[in-house]
Image (cartoon, rainbow, N blue to C red; front, top):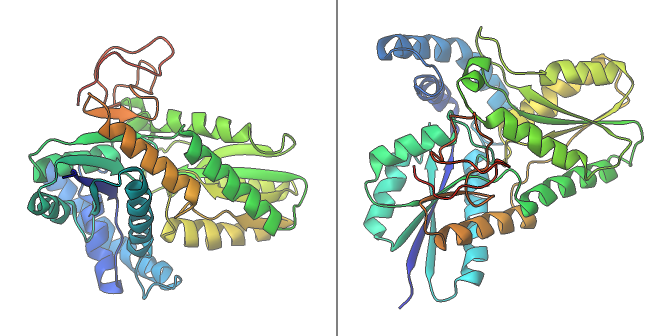
Length: 357
């Protein structure tokens, strides 16, 4: 009899209806990984921020064809179906079941943990739908999982340099360029969600992973394209990492560039891809004279992306350690203390002898 294998997919989640927008935002901003303040202060700030942002957020959610909510859960469910089918090809004698664990809205991590426990699998693999590791995303999801589930699990911490993942991004970019009429004089903006500088200065490796990944993509698109990594979705008064996506869109538009803009930290369509990249920055580009503005679709169920998730899952099932990156061991160079791998770093910054979390 084969194994029962549970694959738990982490993501942030999103409100499923207008009434859920404010509580979703409150859950987001009261996470200590997001607002790093003492508990009473954090709860007060979360309440204030969620109330002030909810009206505009509701308007933005209404712009999407999702009943006033986020399309993130249906997108993730489609990824689950595709990944399950792909894994079952490689594991014909085993039973594979994927579970969705959202951080800030249903289905919550706690519900996923209870469902996994009830199913009683032989192996559990934790697979973040955040390709780059950050303490604010994968780190927060792992903390929530460990509180909710006391069994053993194998963790995939990040896969920003995985070949299938990179190739899927390049394929999406080149496909969007063709659909736009193959314009010349292109500025390719690779946009990722931003972070406060203080988070990166504290050792979070997210920015390093995003920018190293962007260099790899730049080497696979036409050499005459201008390629720039940038960061979107700034919230609050803190100084954030840059350059800001908004500033880069304006700069490229004023320079007369045909803009291609691709999400490199989001793998599913949601408010930040469909509205922020798809609508708000398009208006900005047109206001400043861009000849064209084309949004590249998120990876979704791109076959190469699903295959890359399957390969990482299979590698995790075969490893002796409890955690892996797409490099096998530690991916990040020394100095990034936020990396979940806690031991010796190889000189090249891409492997370790042993790992633990």
